[in-house]
Amino acid sequence: MGLDASGGGYMTVPSASERIVANLLTARTGQELSQARNWRIGSALSGIFRERGISNIDQLACMLDAPDNGILSQQVVEALLNNETYFFRDRPMFDHLANSVFPEIERRNAAARRMSILCAGCSTGQEALSIAMLLREQSVRWKDWQIEIVGVDVSHSAIASARAAVYSQFEVQRGLSVAQMLGNFRETPMGWEAKEDLQKMTQFRVHNLLTPLQSDSKFDLILCRNVLLYFGESTRSLVMSLLLQKLHPEGWMMLGAGETVADRTMPLTQIKEATNFYRHNGSSIAA
Ligand SMILES: C[S@@+](CC[C@H](N)C(=O)[O-])C[C@H]1O[C@@H](n2cnc3c(N)ncnc32)[C@H](O)[C@@H]1O
Image (cartoon, rainbow, N blue to C red):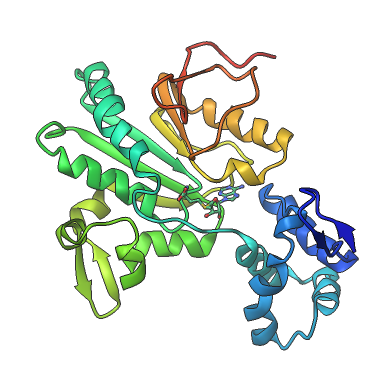
């Protein structure tokens, strides 16, 4: 047993097998399981244990060592990713988008009438659909505009859910008023499905943020929320610099509540009125 880094109490030091599993997650996604989140390993993997008749983590670690472990290791990585999300998470940030950022993009792109938005680490799609709902509420402003909202995530299962755009009663109520739910979703035997016009505005694909994004667009706005905080410092810088290559030189970056860019070499300026928003300052990344 060792003392919790926060000084808050005692917790178990991860075993060699737990480290093998945690290292697999880091190697594939950059995500680190802090000591405080190590408890997740057992509970997150319980479904895989049941399905495959695995009795403990040591047995799993041996199986991961086998040469033909491709499907199992992918399953383990998927199970350990934290996909927590909900509609209009941190609502004031969406208000800032609607009231300040979108009007400015509208002015800047008035001639081309195009806007591109990237949700990096979009999980099951609620964040991208929240943006689509905001724009739908401003439909007069965006009439005849070509708008693309691209959501990417390393999790295949999260992207499959985002593409299906069907949510349980619990999910659809998290963050939406009844009016928003009824106006933007229709009830089906499978659950609440996003209406077709919202689905048309959004597209989702599997992508690992540790690698360059294949895209011809420079995005006017990139959201990367509640993803960076599970990366180590150098991985965070790598992911930010790859994202910045895809941000318009006057574009906006929106991080999660409480997230800031500590790396001062990044060509970003923090917005005074909304501290989780950054603006590309037009220069390239310092060497
Ligand atoms: C906690 S969720 C946040 C979802 C959403 N951005 C929000 O704030 O509500 C983090 C997401 O980042 C994804 N993720 C983690 N590492 C990633 C990586 N290397 N590349 C792409 N997505 C990643 C996870 O699969 C997960 O769906």
